[in-house]
Image (cartoon, rainbow, N blue to C red):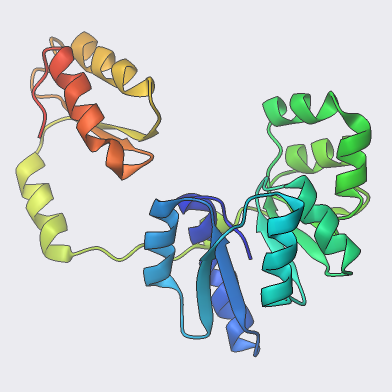
Length: 232
């Protein structure tokens, strides 16, 4: 079962728990350190974590030889060509769960229609988040598509320290707050500029920037300083 990053992998936790309850042994793979750290703490007994191998035939083959899965599930849009082909060659069913196909991704795949169709034909079923996602999969040639909704809406709320939550609430008080969540490089400046544009109208405005990858915290603070803003 594969989820590339934090959001994708967390959306799979409920599926992992359900499969373990039915007697399956589950291997969960991720592609980022932050996802590995988080999912490792959330997996129930009976599930293990490994990093996803590079999508090269040799490494994929060694990975499959070692783990010998009976079924493979990938989340959202993780369609890696060599992995898809290798699973199909070994008659290991591949399911795309929480499937997502944005307009931008669709345009990219549409430039190689034969490749897209050949890969999607090797997926046992695509369980799409929305009708729009499902339609794009079908237009690219996926033969078996169904709309199943978004697994992220079913994910359990992440545990939080209630004392810390109360402490933050006391610190914020009645200040107006807005959050720039899951930011990537280049987007922090936009948040700083938005704060600068609003601070005269809302003198006590608090802007919270939550970068997609926590290791970027120093970059966010430096960006705020460069815009003449205080950060904590």
